[in-house]
Image (tube, rainbow, N blue to C red; front, side, top):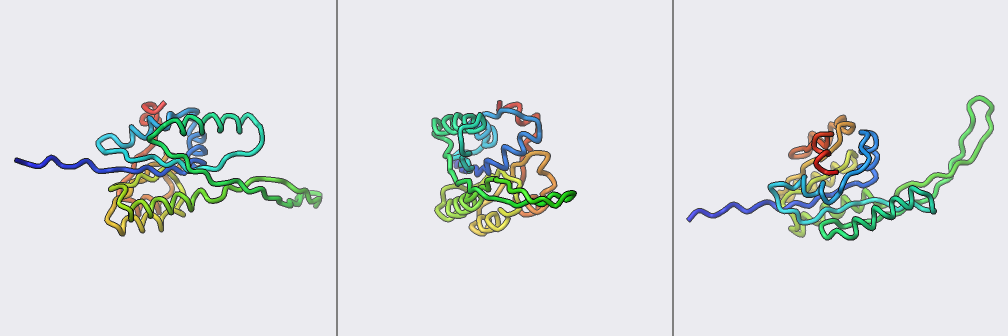
Length: 188
């Protein structure tokens, strides 16, 4: 009797801030993240989606919206929310016309990329998955992709059309999924 081929196990690794920026640049307001996971893994076995981001600070409407989004993710067993942190920074900026220096505050996301890359590599070595799907547009992930591939696993790059210029990820990954309007319509 012929043996039925086993479906490949997939973990999805999402750079949440990168994803949100690309989503807004593409003019897409809302995506159902668990549905996105199901759409990406058709024909595979979804092990887990890991969504990496940093919480906003304060009590702004953006903070409240992000908090509601986090709560929805936490209710979903298929998605793990992995939080980094936002670190406040001050920048002194000199006005080019008058020379006056003003101080501006901004926040820098910390730990998100390294958490994602570490989990991707550790997961490959722990045999948690057969295929990694990387939802990001940052070439900083190339060494992690290569480390995963060195274990014999495949990496599929999932990206928005606005991220298609990232040739280095296209070159190193084993395949790609374009998160275009047609695909994302199935994830709302």
